[in-house]
Amino acid sequence: DFPMPQFIIIGSQSVGKSRLIESLAGEQFNFISGTLGSRRPTILEFRNVESAKESKWYVLDEATNQWQQRPTSEVMKVVGDAHNMLGMDVSEHPVKVRIESSMCVDMQIVDLP
Image 1 (cartoon, rainbow, N blue to C red):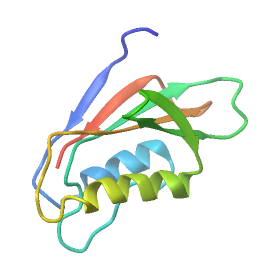
Image 2: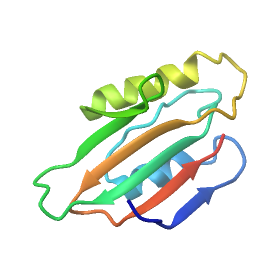
Image 3: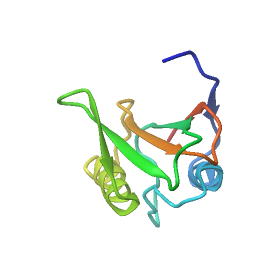
């Protein structure tokens, strides 16, 4: 691995920070709520894989510290559950997601609550 650019998205709650990140990813992956959306940081790591014929999504399993490949719908569920379990609280503990695609550039984006 090598150092990659990291961007931190900041702004007021529910102003579209997560939607901006989703537009960069080209797919919806994050949790949508009518009240408070992101309740913890979401770290999205983009990896350019020129040979990839389709996007591959991964979630970091905190227990094993291993990336687990999952369909986008399952990534949405994992991220949603991680935010939902906090109720109305906010946490500094991030959810980590990786996308590998021939259509993205190597970078990391942090979506803050």
